[in-house]
Image: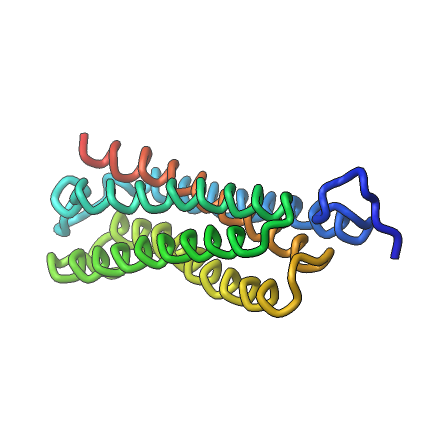
Length: 198
């Protein structure tokens, strides 16, 4: 296999470049998915029937912690990729682990929020607003959960195989996925929570 030494290792072969390009196409489909979920939510946001509205169930403190964790994890995954490009395996793994720990913290708070919503009478069958909210937040949360499993699998591969064409490619693609989840969360924070609390 020919390795292009002029490019970062994750782009070091034509196959690697094609995989990254293919993942960008996949992210385009994910953008369409979340755009649809946001559209449904924005159409149904005022249809809460006899159930609670956004201001009645949203708690900004927990959402701010979630936002801090996820945005900071975007920074640490960037540091992981930077370390990877410098050929520093241990720092790369440390930053990846920090990213996953913050992702786990985010997911824990989100699950706790769901239990709080249900305790306050907001379930999938309560109203169109709550259904749309749960589907949007749940889809994002499921993506974060999948990302945690994916990140652990990559860490195991890097630990065993080192920084190779394959592991760097997978790590870089994972970082694109993680940054995408952070961008989606910024939209959720802005258009669901902040707008909902006004």
